[in-house]
Length: 360
Image 1 (tube, one colour):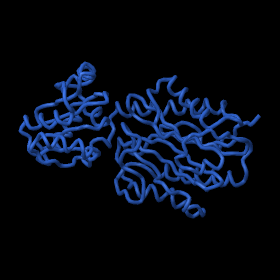
Image 2 (cartoon, one colour; image 1 turned 90 degrees about the vertical axis):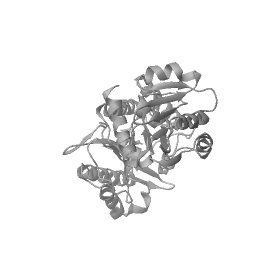
Image 3 (cartoon, helix red, strand yellow; image 1 turned 120 degrees about the vertical axis):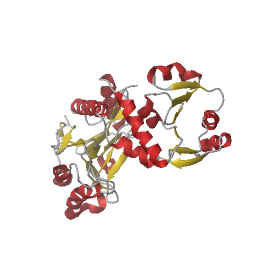
Image 4 (cartoon, rainbow, N blue to C red; image 1 turned 90 degrees about the horizontal axis):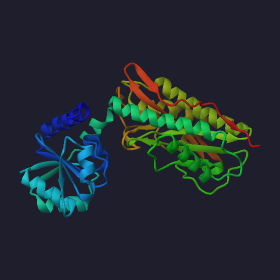
């Protein structure tokens, strides 16, 4: 068994022992991949103190054996959920851990085949996954390098008259051409008054001189997400555009000076939020300052007022304040940082200067 998988399974087994669980079954694609390496779209892991099982169908048996060699691969022919229940029953499991993301229908079918009691291990799995090992960090860093590369390219690509979709497709093309296996689902390419939409997906709107273009992108490398946002302006910025951009950049850089191991997520959020609030735009910054990421684009902890988590070495988290003025536009600046002993590493290299795109 690989050292990485052994460490991850050992952590899960410590949780199982503490909770007196006979088994845990895992359905979500992120946790399946994390604990086994299996990337197929259908399958369930069943883990006990002495066994690692992977149930899947005919389509994925050979793939599962290649990607998860430490697991015993079991081919099922009927419904996956029924096979899971039957296997848990055959293992004489009485107390079983499960994820919160499990559907009601799936769990109902499992219960029909087994006499177990079921208990959530969602919080515990989040705790295991929140500290990234070196292999995870390298994949995330490769992803942010692709974002930096795509951003540098797009600066010479953007011209008035293009649509948001054209810009978004070019960014996606550059990232995939250079090694990304995919992009995050919620790419934001929003221009003009649409840049006031925090998650404004690209449309056929034509980009014009005098407007902000906000680009929130992310490359996926070996299953791991990256996250990156920059806002540029086409043509010389107005005083209002300079003001808003300066406030957001000041807030972001203040948070970066404060962030580090031992800091509380809510306190980091307040550092940036207080600057925006004191500038008179508190009501225009409605999302969290940042979030962890990994095999999912949004993981825990989250830098917001309600999250009292303490940052630890090995966490990877975004820092992304913004100001959004309906009918006018908005600005967001986002970096991806890796918490380390004594500080952090900023994996994002793109400048935070307000870049002016030549409209000619």
